[in-house]
Length: 157
Image (tube, rainbow, N blue to C red; front, side, top):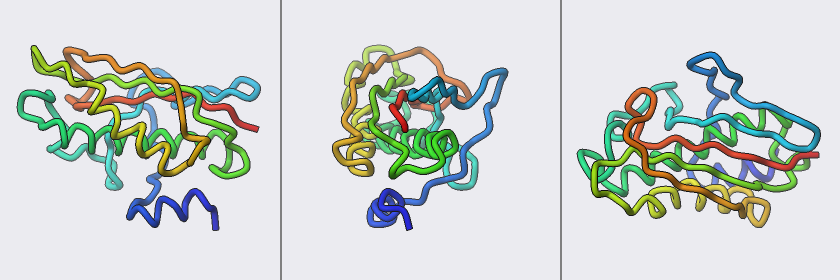
């Protein structure tokens, strides 16, 4: 069994299957030792976005629900990473960067706290290999009315 998958299980989480792209792009791109993961939406294990993870944070969606959505996005980033690298243990050197796009209501500026849902999960699952640089941006709309989208860049072997 994988140590990383064991950590997920301890957290009560399961890695979902890697989601297929919803438009004309690839889910990840590997170049040498770098893997760039396209933006991942908060799809659940059933391949759907929970209604609690749709809409604008600071509007109909609470910051706590948005942070939970960011956590689901991070799980989907990890699923794509496993598809790209083959496994999440020996193959993954580090998470270099996460980028977060937060669907915000006008005036909502606490986007960093929402993105912590993804950042915290990455460190919980990958340990020190999960520490990363980060950008977090509030946006007017996201695909499928998702409240959060997260992208990533990883160093792999």
